[in-house]
Length: 184
Image (cartoon, rainbow, N blue to C red; front, side, top):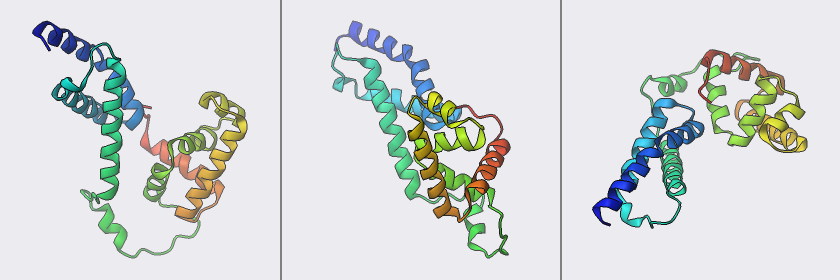
C-alpha cells in the first residue's frame, strides 16, 4: 500500500469514529466501555490493514471488528469471576430467608443474562409501561412476537429467581429507577 493510500485510509478510519462509538454504545450501554471498544477496534484495524481490500466497504469491516471484539470479550467475561467489591464472596455467606422479596443485585444479574430481544421486550412492557402494541411498534416486530418474548423473559427470570411475574415488573422498575438514566 503506498503512502497516499495509507493516508486516505487513515482519514477514513478516523472519519468512522463517531459511527463506531454510536454502535459500541448500543451494544454495551456504557459510554466508557464503548470508547474502549472503539479504541480496540481502530487498533486492530490499523494492525491488520493488509487484510482490508480496497474497494470494499470499510465501515462494514470496522463494524464487524467492533462487534466481534465486543462478543469475544463478553464471552471471556462470562467465564471469569470478578469480585472487586466482594459481592460474590458476600453471596457465599448465609442470609435469612426473605420470602416475597427479590435481591435487586440478583435481579439485575438475571436480567442481564436474558437475550437482548427478550430483555428489551420485558423492559418496554414490564417497566416502561408500554402496551404490547406500542412495544411491538418500537421493536419493529409483530404483537405476538412481543408477547412471546415477554413471556419467555418472565419464565427465564422465574427459573433464575423463583419469583412471580408481578414481582418481576416491580423488580424491573426498581432496578431501572436505581440505575438512573441509561445511555441506551
